[in-house]
Image (cartoon, rainbow over all chains, first blue to last red; front, side):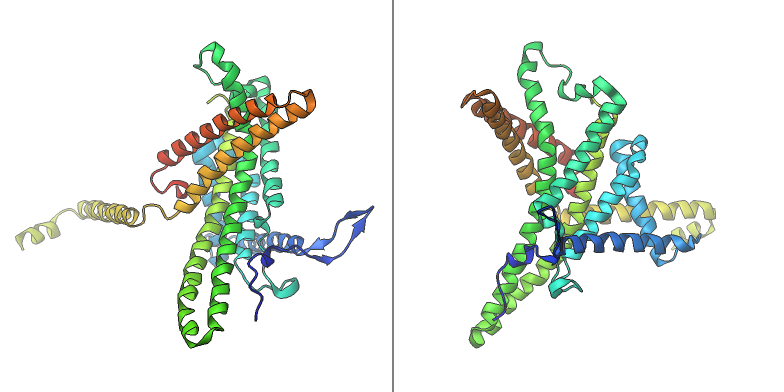
Length: 257
Length: 111
């Protein structure tokens, strides 16, 4: 019987074992998929911009669509000023979107011929959200200096209440990277486990006699439906991550709103 | 019948704008219809948004309280106060998320 463990898909295993000064720096299947995503995005953008036709072809249309989408998202949330962060937000969005979509492929020309969803590991999403936060805080302090702290002191509050409101605002701010990373991670993890659980039902019922074989059509139908849903979630979570990045960047650009 | 004749003889520019108006009305109607049919495709992601926002607030509050305890030896007051403030911050996060989602229409995260 096939392996029906729904958690096996998240295993990180080394492809190219490497150790530097006792630190494990192996090239894992996780790193492999990250490289694949970067290569894929780079290839798409490079191919799309070679022709630069006035009337875009297919590849160029995709690139222009993505550009317009991200640029519109930044403009609507952080204003035209926010467009200076376009390279960052676009990179982040494309990286996460490609990783999510690569994760939807069950069989890949990868080690073990098995797909892997990099974004279903919280350490990856947490690193990405910390990157966002470092840029937000760094840029906010560099641009606004001391005024950046106005984020923690909302106006229109009676003076004694600041003793409570400020710590709450600080905690709320510090919880952002956690919330951002947990959301992406939980969505991908839960969705992929659900898919695998229903897929294993198909195998279990399919090997349990004629009645089970016929009954296996039900979970199979669920797997098809869930796959469609997972594609939506994969796109939506990349979108949500990018738009929240824009909202936080907006705080850095205009604190005290 | 006579009505149709009249419209055929009218200014072509008028007709174009009339066409545009009817087209827009139709598109608008279709959009509303579509939104009504699946009001929250992304209900799951909205739920997870509330959940993770609240959870993160509580976790950071409690974690901060524990750090204060460890550094200053105020056990258990740092944890107690941090947890309470964390709950408040989590609630604030949820209220803000709800305001965002309400402001951007029923479909929430999907703009």
